[in-house]
Length: 118
Image (cartoon, rainbow, N blue to C red):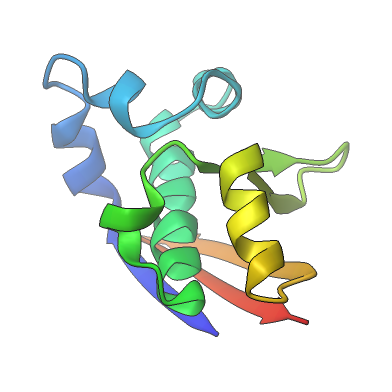
């Protein structure tokens, strides 16, 4: 299990830096966030989800990479984690078969909890 909390205002400030958006998020996440009233809320949630996944897997964010896992929303907005083929292979080697994700945000914070199941 992994959990992370992310400051939404920190992500808003980071978005003013050249290249941060495309370095940290995949196009699907960027498009989803841009359709929302306050995109940074949804980007902070996705960032927290990556951090929580990195903690739960024991890989750490540096080894896992920022764009190797991302958040996809289903037809009603429910989040799930998607993995790159390389990360999917790494998780399979560890015996990880299912990833559970819960995201929430309130005020200036977004939080994510990830549970890995074999």
